[in-house]
Length: 164
Image (cartoon, rainbow, N blue to C red; front, side, top):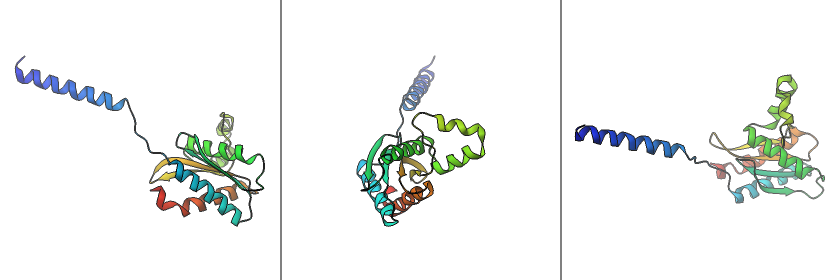
């Protein structure tokens, strides 16, 4: 081999190794703990304004709990339910209301409700920065999952500038 061929071979192998090492790690964005705490409290405030005592849970993109806020008078079951809804939404990257509708209309999707830790009831909403899911919020305690979800949406709208 001449020097140019040897250099070209070395350069290609270096690029291949660099690409392989770059593929060995990933970089992801996730909601910050301070923002999660604000979002949980804002959600409880939004529901309280509508006369509902709820618990709001915010998880990171992996479904790990970052913040939990419970209104005075919220049911004892609501912290676990809100956390499960948030986990379900973060894990699936979808609102839990849509998942619940899918299960009702498609018997083949019923197994979603059997996944450990999932709670497929309305009230779980993904948190997005642009098109990327960076976490999720779960709400429990209003007299209907659609109302839980509405409170989460109000809180997300109030903090939208922080979630960019």
